[in-house]
Amino acid sequence: MIRTRAYLLVPALLLAALTATAQRRLTSNTALQPELQAELALQNNDYLLVGVSALNVNGAGTTFSGGQLRLGYEHFWSEQWSGGATLRLLRQYGQGYGDFLGQPGNIVPGVFVRHSGKISSFNFGQRLGVEYGISTVDVLSIIERNNRASARLRLDVDRIFPLGETVALRPRVAYEAAAYLRFQRDENQVKERTIDFGVLRAEVGVRLSPHVDVTPWVASQTAYTVFVAQYDAQGRQVSGGRTNLVTPVVGLDARFTLFSGDAAQERRQLPTQH
Image 1 (cartoon, helix red, strand yellow):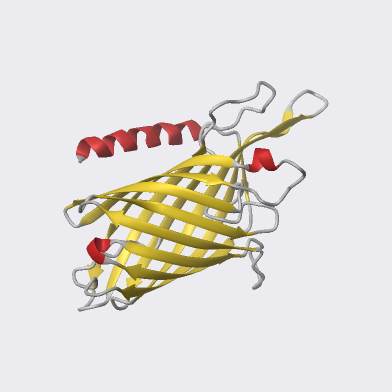
Image 2 (cartoon, rainbow, N blue to C red; image 1 turned 135 degrees about the vertical axis):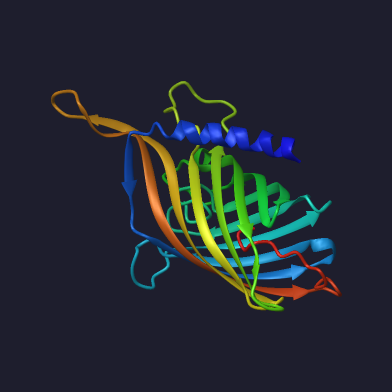
């Protein structure tokens, strides 16, 4: 278990270190992202998930400019290992209103594998996934360039604090990095960053009953980009180049769990960030 964790953690730390060399940082308005989830609990901790979220990127008002339908299934092979498949359908104007702001694709199928461990009273998780974002809307006639495969690695730690027979708190911190899979690059293409997106998220899950839990959360999303450099008359770079686009996000996940048969007994509930 320790060896497996090290294999995943070391590459993540190396990739994160590479992003620290960015020269510019731009911060946008705070985005709002509520999500309503329905989870059908099956035997052996397996589950089916349906989630609907909305996104307000203006930082004010109640106008939501995008949204996402999330479908998922996860199967547990053991206490530590599980895997499954996901499908995300995005309603968006332009692109990039899903899990990562700015990520291409409005139809995003994916597969993933998860490893869970425990040290004392702390739960540690690692989730490695591969997705393919498909753009069905012709944006400036460059559909082919908007279809992108990406790999996602998430590391998280949490702890459960029981407050009664059914009520519990679950504070949790998670970091996820996503990188496009670049199998071949044209010589005239602009060189991209090693990591394309990163999300640092902190939350407190509130378990009200076996059927209902809510999770308020805050996150900092970063899109690691390379813009065309702009120079002044003296040849000094004034904009463009390696730039980090940072978006603060505030969210609230509300989940309703339905049980199939006696699956409620000794059910291990995952965080709402599946």
